[in-house]
Image 1 (cartoon, rainbow, N blue to C red):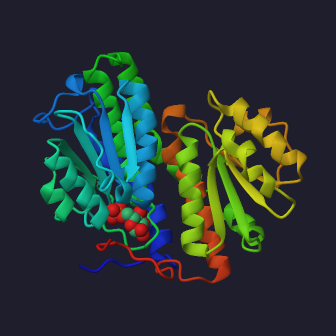
Image 2: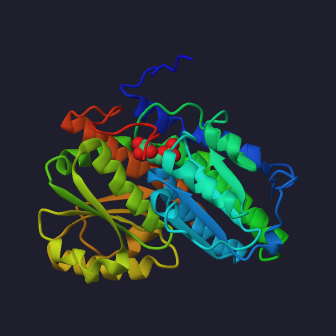
Length: 368
Ligand code: G6P
């Protein structure tokens, strides 16, 4: 069927702005709002308490959603997670635990490597859970459990709303697993559910950063390379930020764990290199800031994405500071995705690239 751009110049812009709505819709599917609990299908073919480990495979943006889920599942359910890009997973003959759980994540549900990973896992006797946006897709059909992301059709090649809906779904899985395994108390579950329910409102706040990111994009569109840094769940988001920028603006970008800066990329820092730092005021904020001092000392141009408290504690000269609303640290990846997407989008528009159909890329990669 026909999907229209409405008042937006590009599908990507429309899809970014749909996020509060589609994430709310996805959360409503997994949350019992009256009881403030997470609700997964009751007939799961596996038992979270019996799992030793979870394996995840996915490609591109879906892989980064999986990386964030690893932090959540390990923290909230104390369940070890192994994650690979699907093109590696499918050939590395990973030994998988008996009766284990494999999670594949895919917007299209047709990505060849992800599908091959699913099939390998099934042959190895795994229960396969698919977090998938297209319910009629091959991956949805072949999985044992389908966890739909209710993002609606995504047309822009660079994934935005599918990513945040994947995160919403995976957060629900992490909380459900944590509850089932007795790691999270009912109170802790309620706290996390309340935080998740706030996400759509916070995303609307974050979308107001459009004009600031547009101004910033004028400077970014003139550089050759950009570095994205983050720690904890902000690290995979840094990877996603770099991917988004290179996909649609063709500017070279790299995402790095903030603590790894000194092991290489610091050599690249000079007054021409913007460093986008994703640093909500959380338990690793101070660590990230000390890494930023190293960037500042070398004349690097820092773009800091943080909240009010973070900005007050930063004591750092930045080229720009994007101030995000305050929120529970558990949900920052969902909301901080917005400024990261906006920056890539406006930079690409500045450069005059084909934002929705970037060169050499396909929405769905059904070949190896
Ligand atoms: C392509 C798309 C990306 C997407 C990746 C995985 O590279 O351009 O946006 O993240 O495939 O696709 P999937 O449909 O499996 O999520």
